[in-house]
Length: 511
Image 1: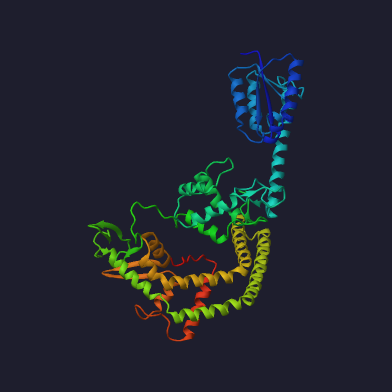
Image 2: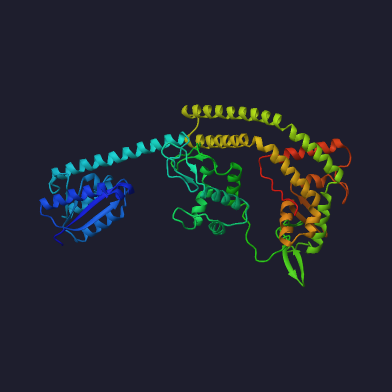
């Protein structure tokens, strides 16, 4: 066994370690103690880690070295510097039992005697209780901040800290890039790995300046903080945050569906115009695209299915017929233009009416939250049921707040969407005929929801609101609503209601 001694000093935070004040004071006290008792220090161990956590690596390395008899003993500043949890104190006790000396520079204790060990044990228990109480008070304070709408932990990626009891501020650099990451992933064309590459190329970096990992992106995309809610992992319920949301609830929910595997599109090796768009009418399985003798065929691979292959040229021809059916005549478009102009002039009155309705919904929501809290306090619900119902109401409140904030622009957006739709419906056929393959594929995905093969006939199902135009036609090339202006007005009203909805409507302008 070496005749020398180890010294061990610890600070609870990185800031204390960087400033060095606590380390210096502890080291000086240990050096004075060693000089007084003529003890030689042969190795010094310094740790920047809270003693509330077990498994401190440097502390454990020191204990291991002492058990290997590489030193006669160890000198520590105080008991609470060595252990504020009883597991670490037990490690020191095992060293004492092995005959290894443990000295505390600030306490005069004879740990070889029963009375000295008892006194040290009591101090260790007091220190452990202190840190336990400190942890509880800290958690209580953090929970209080969360209930006020403040996030008490370091700002998530895309935000910056502004100080205690203040809302996080958007990071002008990373914030817009992270929002773009939500939008890109919601489109369903990227895996998390591909998204990491894409966002790195756009300039999104982690706090160390590197590329975000797959797990880091997943954590960000799952974090409700970005849509305006705050919570701690130890808390089951969410609270409305004071910070500015980075994304809307609608976009956040869309990303969650994609993360759950319902919207991810796998990359394909070969390009086929109607890949995963054609369904067999007999067995309801997807037709598989194959290239043979310079032509593309869509075949059903279900054993025993009688559906014959569909040649791609035939599919294109029947799809073009559908595009002709959703065209509007010039007279119909002029009628829509006049009515849309009237609608825009009446927008302020409608906005104020909707604002009042949303305010009433929000007040009703607040009343339900109060009743829910009272019911929970009376023992009507258990904590899990209370948290689930409260989170649902908080989510609804976020939705109401978003709808209220968008009221002024919603009317303009709905009319803009409608005008884009009318423009696309007007020129969809010509655009499809003149577009390249990628643009054609985009148009197919925008307009159609499913193409069903029944023998030699193709049943075409279009997405709303194209389906309403398609189903309202009486011929293959005529306009759909030539009967009366009343019919056109009713149809236009349906379209305006549709494009005023909160769900995103992707309408690509004609190229």
